[in-house]
Image (cartoon, rainbow, N blue to C red; front, side, top):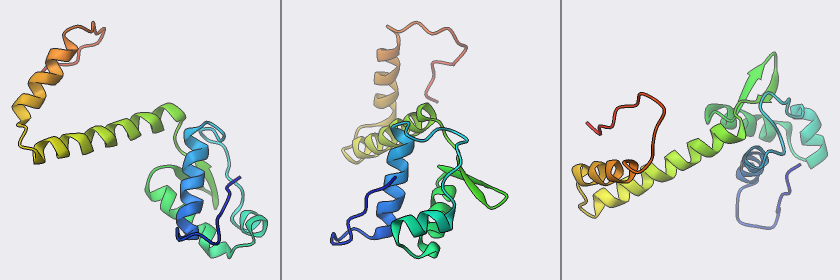
Length: 129
């Protein structure tokens, strides 16, 4: 399921979380698919069950998993996850551009200019304000 590097500098819990996120993003596990039980996964990975539980709980807080009756399930689909990732990257890019003194008006103008070439079949307003 998830490969761990016990000799590396990255914390094990972070490796677990990144590994599960990678499985979700690649479609290896699907929306509403049940994750391995905490004790089962801990035994397989020879880890303390508390570490797996903490990883699952953190992934739940991040929106990757949900809990139902003590079991954890995948909460998002690949498309939702990919969209969320792109939006996070977009937000980071906007912040970086703003640090470089690019105004929001310029960003909006540029965004709308690029969108003029694309036909939309929805009722989204073409306004940044």
